[in-house]
Image 1 (cartoon, rainbow, N blue to C red):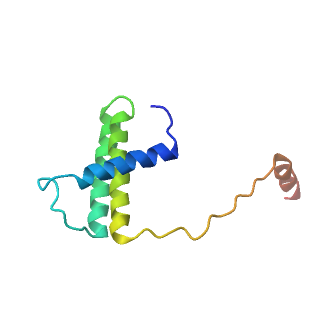
Image 2 (image 1 turned 90 degrees about the vertical axis):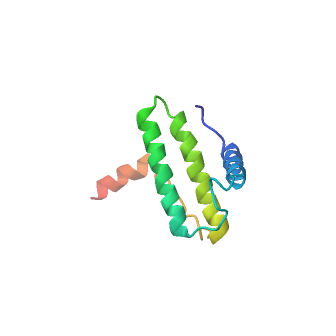
Image 3 (image 1 turned 135 degrees about the vertical axis):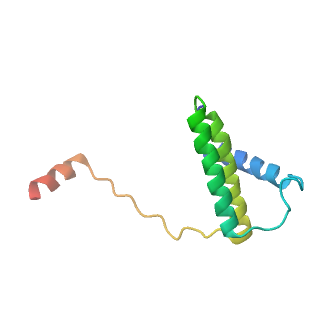
Length: 106
């Protein structure tokens, strides 16, 4: 599969959330879950993704499970909150010449 834009990835996750919301009573009781419940679900689907990657040629089978994992995480944050990252650490680019000078000092 080709790389996908972030916008398209979020669209796919949103579609998976719509699917989850439409599941019938044979798949979910419709009640809210604890964060621990979601962690258990994430672990279960991580195992499915790992197995799909191990047992199938290519990555597509595991990416289907990863889509589900992303949507489960989103649902957890919908129910329990989504704390924002306070700040983004600045990136300092070290130019190759600076690296050479660093080596000379030591």
